[in-house]
Length: 491
Image 1: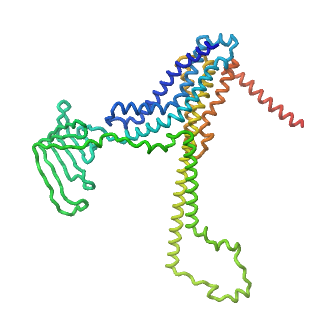
Image 2 (image 1 turned 90 degrees about the horizontal axis):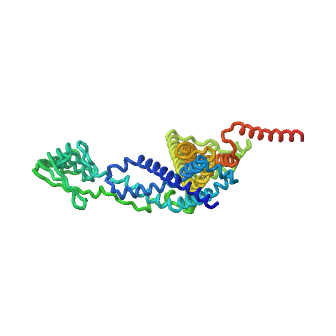
Image 3 (image 1 turned 90 degrees about the vertical axis):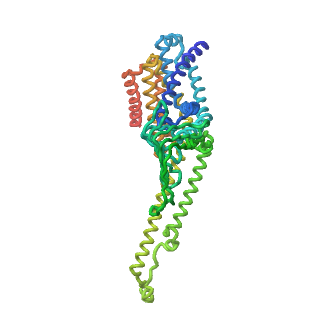
C-alpha cells in the first residue's frame, strides 16, 4: 500500500511542477506585456531586470498554484485511467478515496504551504516588487540621440541631431537648447555643424565636442517681455560641453513608504490596519456632523424646539397688543437681497461640504474594503487548491485521458469560470455592492458543489453525462415534495 501511495505521489509531482512553471511563465509574460513600455529604453542592468522578474514571479505564485493543481490532478488520474492502472486498483477493492488519499494529504499540506507563503513571504516580495517597479517606471530613458528627434532626458537641456554616422559616431547639425534657468525659457541656444560625444570613466558626465558652430545668449530678467536687454551672439571653431548624467541613474526609493499598503501586510497586520481605518472613519464622520450642526442654523436654533404649537391669543388679548408689535416693519429691497445672497451662499457651501464628505466617506470605505478583500484572498486561494483538486482528480478518473490535450481544455474552462467570478465579485466588493464575505468566496463556493458532484460520480462509477440518471434523480426529488404535500393535506 505504501508503494502504491508513493507511486501515485510521484506520478502527480511531475505534472504539477511542469504545469506550475508553465502557468507562472504565462503570468510573467502578461506582466511584461503590461509594463513593456516602462522597461524598454531605460538602460537597465541585467541584475535589476532579474531582481524585478524574481519578485514578479513570487507575486504570481498563489494564483498559479490552484490552476497547476487542477491541471496536474486531471493529468495524473486521467493518465492512470488511460494506462489501465486505475481499473485493477478498483478491482482489488480499493475505492477512489483510498486511491486519492495520499494526494489529498499532499494537497492539504500544499494548501497550508500556499497560505503560509501568501501570509508571510508574499508581503515581503510585494514590498520589494512594488518599490523596485516604482523606481524603474520613474527612471528616465537612457541616453539615445536619434536623428531628427529632440532628446530631453538630461536635466536642463534639449538636444537634437539631424543625422548620425553609426560607424564613426559623428553627429551632424547639432542643436542644443539650454533651459537650466527656471521659468526663463530657452535663453541660450547652441548650434554646430558637427560634433562627437564621449562619457567620463564613471559615466557621470557626457562630453560633447562641437565644431564650426555659433551660439545665442539672451540676458535679462524673466517675466519682462517689454524690456530691452542685450543679446550675445558668438561663433566658435571648437567647443566642449560637459553635461551631467547623474539624473539618468535609477534612484532607489525607501521601502518604508510602501509598507502600509494592503498587499504588504499579513493577516494580523491587515486586521489591525482595518480597525485603525474604521476608528479614523468614525472620528472623521463625527467631525463632519459637528461641522454641519454649527453651519446649519436650523439644526441649532433652540427656539424652534421650545414649543410644538404657536401660542393662541384671545380676541381681547389681541386688541391689547400695540400696533407696532403686531405688524413688523418690512425690510427694504436691498436688505432682502442681501439676506437672500447670504442664505444662498450658505446653502451652496453646505451642499458642497456634504458632497465632499460623501465622496471622502466613499473613498475611506473602499480603502477598508480593500484591506478586508486582501484578508479573505489569502484564505480563499489556499482553499481553492483543495476545491480544484476535488474537481480535477475525479474528472480525470471519469474521462480517463492524460497528457496536455483534453485535460487542458477542462482545466482552462473551470479556471476561467473561477477567475471571472472572482474578478467580478472583487470589483463589486470594493465598490461596496457586496461585503468581502461572501463576495471573495463566491467563486470558490460556486465550484465546490461541482467538486462534490464529480467526486461522488467518480466514487460510485456513475455515468457523468447520462441524462436518464439525472432525470431519475429529479423524479425522486419531486416525489418527496408530492409525499409531503399529501401528508399535509391529510392532516
